[in-house]
Length: 277
Image 1 (tube, rainbow, N blue to C red):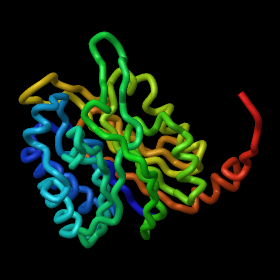
Image 2: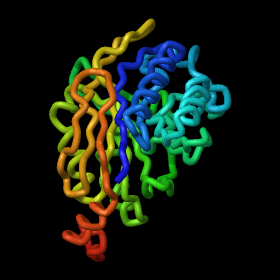
Image 3: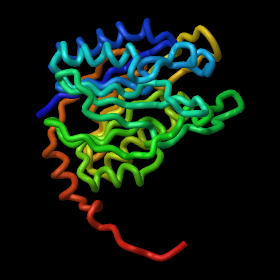
Image 4: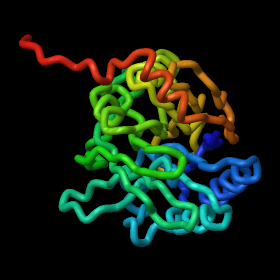
């Protein structure tokens, strides 16, 4: 049996102010016996202003949030999923990376994953997103082997693409991480249903730490996110819901439940070739 801590944040657009708050939540998770703590998407900076992001974001090699959270993981001696950091890249078009990091208990970087699917949607007249204008999409699906199981890393909008999760599960993923900063509108309609579906389809644990509430912005439009960090069992049961406020949600998990769920419904082995449409 292992224990995961889903850390729910209301990050602002100031990375320097966000870091100490996040470090305290990681320490709180460790004190509660977590073997792995997980933070949400864009842990370092929630911002809708590209000019502000250009001013405050850093490349991976210089990012203070990454340095600080690696240090905190080592200080606490636990695994840490940094759900994602917004980072500068050397891309000619100046787009950022939305990158998840798995940090080992010694503070080393065990895995990196760049978000593959970009959130380019018009939810309604007041809420439109074009993530691909500011972020470059990743191209590599990723599995990480740890003492806590084989972990498949994904980020937020990825959850709407079940083929990615099936591929990860068929490659051996037992735990799927979906750190998010989800829209309140689509969150109310789809968040729990999508995450439960990904768990049911793959027979894997799904852990989705989330941003929540209204995010302070020094420049640009203020953003709101859904919250409700979620842990789902391999059979599709909701094990924990983080609600609407920042905090730490604990959940115990047992990898033998993955074996049980996949034995009961072995759909991962039942693919067939077919023609059309």
